[in-house]
Image (cartoon, rainbow, N blue to C red):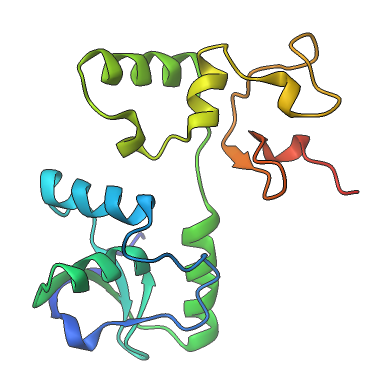
Length: 176
């Protein structure tokens, strides 16, 4: 039987960022944080963070916690879990890694419709590389040994190379 976690409004001072969280630290003025803040202000809070009552750590939603703190919120919605630290860490990594795959055609249509409506596509979290790749205008000369003849538009989750900035499916990146 599947159990649901309890959802409560937690005083924000009881929520602590997970010190082991493997996600990259972002500053308040980072574009991703600004987009998250703007999304919360426009769309309200649509997903509760995950909070472990044994440690007080936010297990999922550490970036949202930072935005809530910047917005000076007093209480935040959280789904409560009761886990030992190692199980908490396992859940944190799972929540940060588990992701779905996009159908490139549907994704492209959705981004086009958003842009046509005059909205900012960047607010979706899409990168410029993704948008240009989906539009078919990716600059292949920027990536050695890749050209339009060998490039297949990705249909899986996109990943960005930290060295050259190329965005593609994770399995296409090879260790050197």
